[in-house]
Length: 263
Image (cartoon, rainbow, N blue to C red):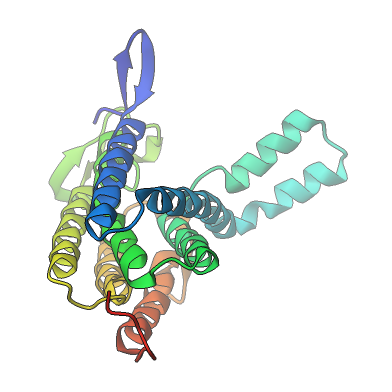
């Protein structure tokens, strides 16, 4: 589609643009909601920054795990006493990309630790942080479509990419799975946002999200055409993680809280 646009004489990734828009809108909404609940939005900003660090690290770590077969390249480079440049190239070949589920898990862990460490009101901050996950993901998947990554299988229904940085995606009519997932994430955001506004499932919205998104993602994986993400027992890495997160979501949603605050 349109992986880059020219702005002030520079080539800027459309994914970066969409991700930036997603960050700004999601961050603004989160701060606005937490203020309406009577809490300090500085705490929410810090929570989102800490969670973002977890997202960054988690996404790259899981990408590296899915490329563990390339670890031998790094071992060879180290064994041959490489210079810094070649060593960096080997590391980037293994950990240079990012996987959404790795980012999600990393962000949840980092966010949970920060909430507990700062003794923030979990029901408020966790619920608000949860609803902006699918909102940001919506913009991210639009970015994926524009760039041509995370592409779908060959299909009579869809689009043909001509200038995606991923050459394997080009010149083939592909199912627009990125747009399907973007729409699904937008629907999840609307559902979670309305539950938050109606004060339903307080402190449980993360559990609901971890049920609804993994179910959708498990299905979407059958329509993905980028098969480099790793497979186990006929399932992709993301499908295996979807199953695990689904059970975690059920546990969170059904767990009975003791002396939980309803504020």
